[in-house]
Image (cartoon, rainbow, N blue to C red):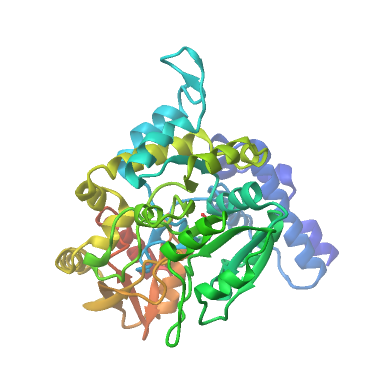
Amino acid sequence: MKRLLSQVPSINKILLNDKIKSALEKYPEIFVKDIIKKEIDLLRFNILKGYVLEVPSIDLLINNLLDNLEKESKHSLRRVINATGTILHTNLGRSLLSNSVKENLLDVAFNYSNLEFNIDKKSRGSRYDHLTKIIKQLTGAEAVLVVNNNAAAVMLTLNTLANEKEIIVSRGELVEIGGAFRIPEIIKLSGGIPKEVGTTNKTHLADYKKEINENTAALLKVHTSNYKILGFTKEVGNEEIANLAKENNLISINDLGSGQLVDFRKYGLPYEPTVKEVLDSGIDVVTFSGDKLLGGPQAGIIVGKKKYIDEMKKNQLTRALRVDKMTIAALEATLNIYLDEERALEEIPTLHMISISKARLEAKAKIFSEKVSTLNFDVDIIEDKAEVGGGSYPASYLDSVAVKLTHDNKLATELEKSLLLDVDVPVITRIKDNSIILDMRTLRTSEFDTVINNLKIALSVK
Ligand SMILES: *Cc1c(COP(=O)(O)O)cnc(C)c1O
């Protein structure tokens, strides 16, 4: 063992190697030294444990180090390609921003801006004013406030309007979103007292009525974003909730979750009210996400009665939950596209992926199939089911088209692994019956060449 340990090269000796010397021109010295030290320590550890019976050659060691340098120098957060067919993939960053947002985003991020400066009046302004006009226009709201995300929007709304007061919510709407966000917990955390009414499958107006007392502040509706109760069910609609709240001097609130500005029924999805429709039904305050169906950056949008929004603006929490200038820039530019709905459906990736026609998906599949035909796969164009995802339209599927790739002597699971680990831009795919499935709804034409190149790499991996 001692003999083996004495054969392990020193860090200084490795640093004299020509390949490492040229690596030092590319990477910072402290980083290179750290990687070498880790590799040497690991080798020593393995020798002491008896896992290694022979010290690898210096060439092998150097090649390992160069691989590690390349791997470790990649950013932690980086681009991937989504070929899964799930449009709002929460693990893959939800909405993609529209290309037309880029200019505004870069302009604001890399220059000074009038973030909190009123140019007309040459005086201090508010960051929240930049989004007010356009959101009012699109939703018909009296007032607007935008915060970090929808979870923050719900917290701020309840904390401002119902602190130490009772909030009535249907048992059928006690949603848990992605583990950490549970409606009863959020109500408590915001200082409110949750009062659950009705049953899991049925809640009637009378259930809400019975629970109202002098300590009640609000009636809360929550979108059941990621599940669906089927069969013998009853929920109370927005208009009835809004009217009951009004009759009793209470505030009606709807956490819409996704929140949408256009009706997607034309594209094969079930009816969901738009933000404007919910406000028109008389609900006082509506909250929704910026990066779900809206197709913008992460944000929480609060719209509703001016007196309530004004109170929220005075809440100290608002400062803790505030949005940054890049979010405001991206959101304003995204919302501006909505002024022309046709354009929004084409240019906002989330909307485009939902509304794209079957014929266009088939055409995409043909182009991809032709490009991939140079590689040694069996290629089929198949019918597929895509999902909106991200807590929208649970249990609804969009008819889609996919390209199915099968290889004679490569397992789909091996290819899938290579497409994640051996390439610069990982491709997230699905596997079915030893085939790789690439759904054309989320795979973008601009990504075809990268995917083909990655498949080539995956095939060449031993
Ligand atoms: C997604 C969702 C949230 C949380 O929104 P974020 O923007 O992810 O913070 C809250 N409520 C409902 C009903 C949701 O669907």
